[in-house]
Length: 225
Image (tube, rainbow, N blue to C red):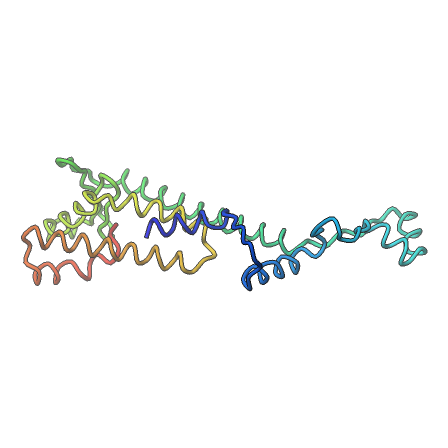
């Protein structure tokens, strides 16, 4: 899935040279003409007069009035410019969302109890939170730590061992770039579900009874990576 996200990012920059004109190529060309009607398509294209000259030829009196008053008519914003602005606004919002998540995590780590373990750090929060892992940190609530820490910690250790957080971090970056694409949102969701399946399967293979583990964990950790 990560490879698919990378391909989705690279493909728009790949230029394909076709010996013959195909239906898809014609469709893209027509769409380009719709968005950029003023673009010159070749040396045979007619000369496009500046806007001021068109005004003077079409209505000389209006042109004289315009020059006299010093008021200029602004050009309308092209669809490409509008779409570009909207796209970068979306990217900015997604990056702010990601930054806010890191700030919230930093605050949570700072005010919670920290227990040093071999290979990871256990963070016990007094609040009601869903257990999750972040690289070498495993975060869970005080209630989960007192009731059934073994299964939860083992589950999160599997996420750490399989480096799922790296996948999640890269998927969030791809999501910021492709925020407008619903398929990328679905791929990121499916990636998290695969992470959960891999972690659950590793816990069961480690010797935890499947039925006992299912009753304690399945409804407590919907998205822990």
